[in-house]
Length: 158
Image (cartoon, rainbow, N blue to C red; front, top):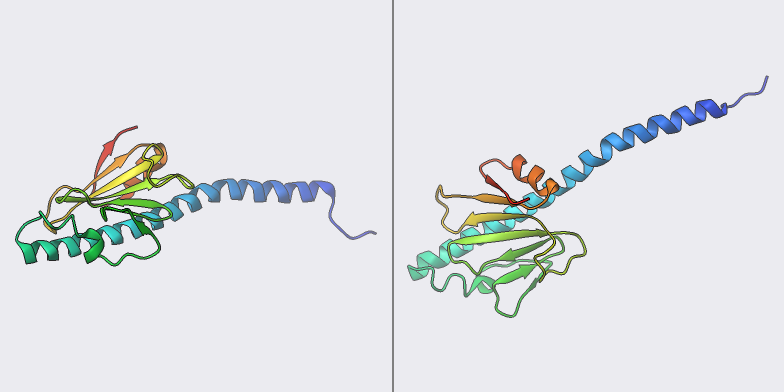
């Protein structure tokens, strides 16, 4: 008697692997996006602390947004010429509003100066007090990420 697998057995194994990967891939994608969001939140918290220190030194926010690039040490990205926008591979951070810092999640391979490919936006206040933190969702993926964040208000812009 010959030993080996029949064609039906191989097809069943391939079918099972296909079903498992179809279930696992969306969950993996969501987990990766949540980790990227965590990275953006850490950057925004760093910006919040740096800008608040600047506020304490100057007793106003007038200068806090102008020196965003001077008071924050951010890696693996580039500042714009005004020093108010920081661009990384996955996010564009905005520091032009003295009261809030923003993280704009752009689609992969999108130009960082273009806001048309937004998935979601995180808005964090400069003062570390209980004020409004908001996640603006522009796509279904963005809405799922916004809903998963604790402590954020979700503003559905889809």
